[in-house]
Length: 402
Image 1 (tube, one colour):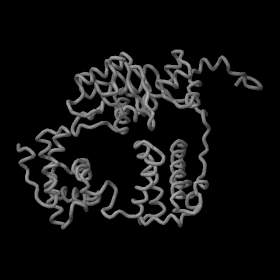
Image 2 (cartoon, helix red, strand yellow; image 1 turned 120 degrees about the horizontal axis):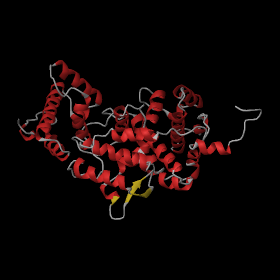
Image 3 (cartoon, one colour; image 1 turned 90 degrees about the vertical axis):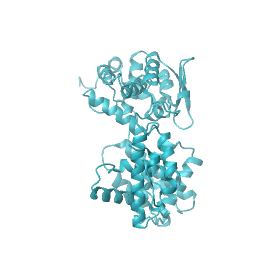
Image 4 (cartoon, one colour; image 1 turned 90 degrees about the horizontal axis):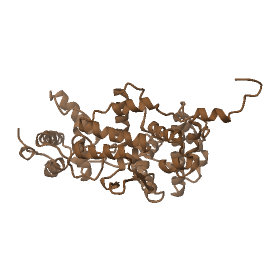
C-alpha cells in the first residue's frame, strides 16, 4: 500500500498536506494509517472545492455534513467525527479552520467568552483545567439568555439570573449546583468590572443548600481494591499503564488531573520521590513507594510507547499524546467492569487512600500532607470513617436506645 507522500491532495487544503504528513509521523502513526488519514484529507479538500468553500469555513457543522454525504456515497470507512478529528485538530492548530464549536465569523458571545477566559487566566490565575470546567457552564448561561449569539449584558436582570439557576440546578446533586453558582458569580463579577452591567448581579445568585461534613466519604473495601488491581492484565502494555495509574490513585490519593500532569522528569529515582503538580501553581513531593516504583518501571520498560513526549502516561495508540481526565475516569470505569464492581470515579479511590491511612494510624495532619490539602478542614471528613472508633465516643440517644 502507498505511503502518505504518494497520496495526492488537490483543492483548497493542498497547501497544508505536507505539514499534515509531518504531524501524523510525529504523532506515531504508521505509514499505512497516515496514508488513510491523508486520503480522507484529499476527499475533504475535493468536497470543499465542489461546494465553493474555503478552509476557514470548515466548521463542526460543515464537517458533519461532509461525513453524512461520505456515508451516502457508499464509503465504508472513516465515517465518524472521531475519524475526521485529527484533520480538524491539525487545521485548527495552524489557524486555518475555526475552533471547535465556533462559527467562522466570531459573534459577540464567542468574543465575550474569550475575554472572560483571558481574565480567568491572567487576573485570577486559574489553571487551564479549571478554565475548561468554567467554559461550558458560562457558555450554557450565555446561550440561554441570547440564543442568537448577540450578547447584550446591559439587558440582564436579577430575575434572569435566578430563573437560570432554578431551572438548571433541579436535581439532588448539590456538588454540581455549587460549582455552577460559583462560576456564575465569577462571570457576573467580571461583567461588572468590565462595565458591561451596571449592577453587581453576583449577589442575586441563589445559594445552594449544603452542609459541610454532613456525610461519610464513600470508600472502596480492601477486597474490591484487590479486584480492581488484579483486573489489569500486566502482560499487555495497556494493562501495565492502567495498573500503575490505579496504584497512584489508590496508594497516594492523586487526583485525575495530577495523574495526567505527571512528566518523566517528575520521577526522582535516586531520592525515591515523585513531584506532584496540584491545583494552580502548587507543587509537592511524595515518596515513590516501592510497589508504585516497580509498576512505573515496568510500564516505562515494557508498556510506554517509544515516543518523544515528556508526559509520563500516553495513549496506547496513535496519536501518542498525554491522557485527559476523561481518559483516567474511563480506565477506572473499565477496571470496575472487569472486576464486576459497581462503577466509580477516580475521586472515590482518593477517599479510599485517605481511609486506609487513617486505619493504619495516620493523623489528620499526615493525611492532609499526603492529599495536599491546604486546610485541615478539608481532611476533617475522614475523621468519621472509622465507625468502630466512633462508637467509643458516641453518647446514648436521649430517652433510650435508638
